[in-house]
Image (tube, rainbow, N blue to C red; front, side, top):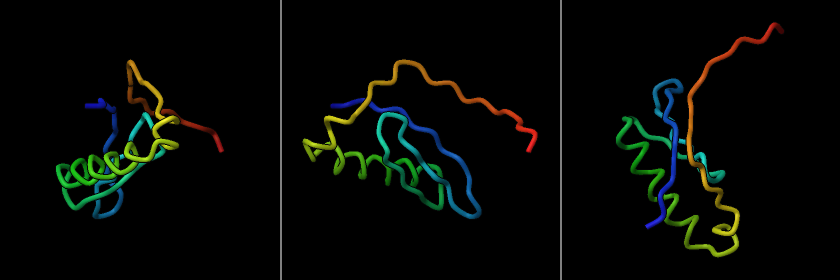
Length: 70
C-alpha cells in the first residue's frame, strides 16, 4: 500500500481530483467518482517503475487561497 494525498475541486460540472505526490489527476461527476478515478490512475502510475521513482512524499498539506493584483 502506498499512501498519497490529493485535493478535489469543482470545475464546471465535474470534480477534479489532483494528486499532490505525483503529476496525476482525474475527474468525475461526483467527489467520490473523482477520487475513485484518481485511485485507479495512481495504481497505473505506480505500476511503472520509472514513474514510481518520481513519486514525492508529502507529509503535511494545507489548502489556501490568495490574491494577485494583475
